[in-house]
Image (cartoon, rainbow, N blue to C red; front, side, top):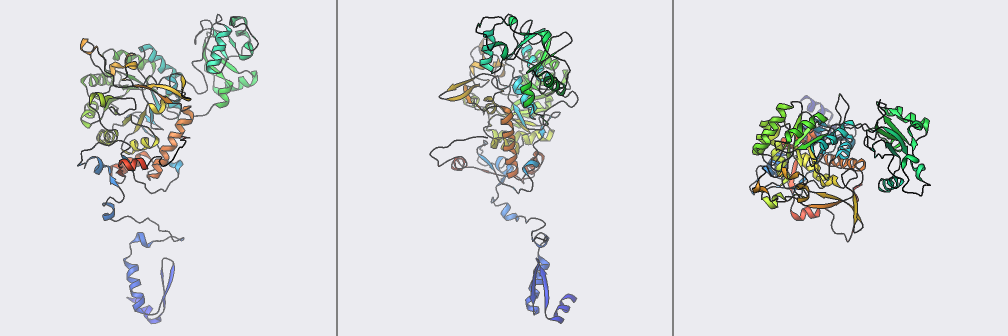
Length: 570
């Protein structure tokens, strides 16, 4: 009142609002302005020096609830009058507000209750995907690999040991030859693998007594391919070697001083335990994101087992080899057989982390959680090489499966692993946004250098073999235990639940995984979430919004309208 009276006295005043000076000469002009200024909400009223609002305006409830900004996950998956299950392609995320840089996006997560990952990627326990090379590379880059079970027990345990023994820069499984091998054998290795620096041991195997080394210069001018290596190799007494336990920096100095290309590492009995190559040292990268045991500094690794009684012996051998997590591998996880083996593992090896599955509904998940599972594997019949839904008429669309199981398992603090159906970084981002703590990939990784198998060419395209563990080829190697629980005449006929095929070359994981990581970060940034923890908070508080895409919308969201194009991932 007194302010108005004072202004009336002067008949002319300066009304300051939004950094704009307004000159009024009568009460009839300035009274509405005073009332407007008094009633404006603080978020619209407060301004900074440059004119920007201190806090962003928020949508009114009517607009928010109209579907104009998408729908909540509960509206899509729970209030679902059409009773429809959705795949990753069916769902699209709505963009959010970006107030952070790409490098600030945190994708660290939990694989199980007791294992954390810097990167939410897991390689599938398939015989064309994960053996020790894949597991090592995945762990070095922040993920983890699960060794498949199409091995004899001792072979699978050895694969685990190779990962646990790995030390960055050290070759722990070099190709070795014996003195009785020939120059032709070296030339064959050189043609196949591209190098010719080969240790010579007494038995031609790693762990044998070191007798010498053959390098490219030893064979360059040899025309007789049948000449034995003992005649041309550099003998042990002329070699520079390092002793077991040497640090990488020390080994590097030895190579610099001796100007050698290879440095054998031997134990006290002069047996070969590792090899260091100068070329590898030059390419050596420090992997700060590596998934390691905080005490031993060894890489973490997982392995798969079945649900049969003999798999208990397999589990014991894997634990002795140092495995960190066991995945109980079954196409349908809600069985008395799996419940029994999960209970056995938790009782016999209480420190061991156990991932159970596969499941697609909370009714399946609750039994495995009750049995003591530390994580759940979600997915049934949705892999690119899987035919379970077609053959058995059982399964679920993956987006729906991930959302429902993750929402339920969250009550028990059990992380879930979205297994299958991943074809792009967009699918990874959607799986994580729907509640998955990590994703398991098969075909996405099968064409990389680190995957088992040899490359071949077909129609000018470089390919690698890839097959489902439910294919007849894989089942003949032992994976039928994933699909059949009893051995008797009634089950003598194998019913394939997968196919064999080929995938295109993707190069090395050292380039491919960084591409996947960056793609997920871009997706999370566009959705306006800075971490996976924030993603899940917004998901379950109905702040993360989605829509269902029509077939035409899915087509529009991909490459279209071109006569031809070339798609390069990175």
